[in-house]
Length: 88
Image 1 (cartoon, rainbow, N blue to C red):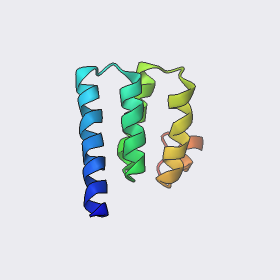
Image 2: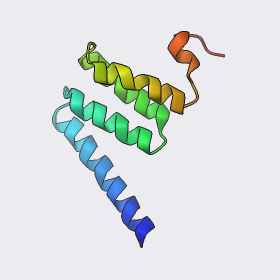
Image 3: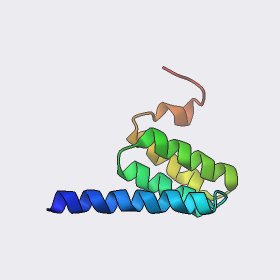
């Protein structure tokens, strides 16, 4: 029961976050929160892309700029932090 309930809660959370972005695609908070959700699900490439979108909307936000390092580390792509554009 717990697994199905947990799965349902995560699925509902994703639906709500996508809906928030649909309603206000210019919301930094919606994109940031969705990036956090994606990272929690282990979907790091998607979380990086979503956080980049939040950064485009608010490039000086310490919250969106600071968390990207965690996403790269979690995705085992830490080298992107030091060498942007370099692909090993």
